[in-house]
Image (tube, rainbow, N blue to C red; front, side, top):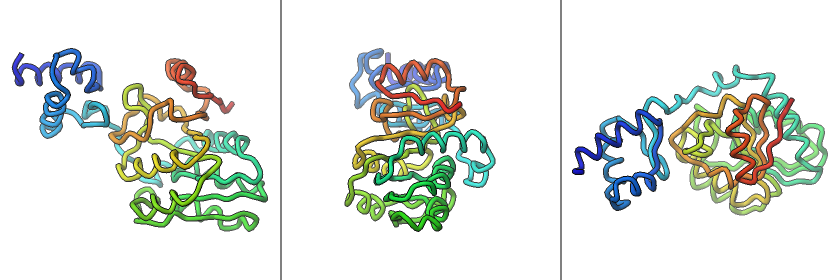
Length: 254
């Protein structure tokens, strides 16, 4: 099979399945990883697919990034319930990282019941909601401000996080897919999220069920990199089973 035939075949596969992995294509076609990556890069330039870490996703499977105001209007009651459950996982005296996001913003509102916490965040909206929490320490990562998500990112943010060690990181996500893992829309935010996970003893992912079966192009981590997933009862059964097989503790907010 020459490169034209192989690339046509790959195109048909991604149209059919929505996503593909480099390792599976290497095995299927008996080519080198370099060759398959070249094929995927070629198809990426032709706007047939979008390259991801370890493979590719069909262009029509990539979710569009909403603005933070649009996110604030979605699933408000569910986010409030998720936030309560997240706070049940936090102990007095903990040092935590609160990732940027609208669900984590609800978590910030719930933290007022605590008296001794250290909270670091890259979310400007989250810091604003912690202004009246006089009894614990709030640390902003600093860095470049991305206005669309009201979040800080970049080398300064990464280095400021690396100076500390935390009990927990409360992580948000834009998409959760079987092949793509835990994903987000913005590359530098994915990088920052990985740093957060590296410096925390426990990784807690909070995401409502609308995030499942959605793919964004930037991988944050795989399922086995998180300790707990807090979501609502509409999580697809297949994902619930996958989390269990990966050793992730699943906590359902009723």
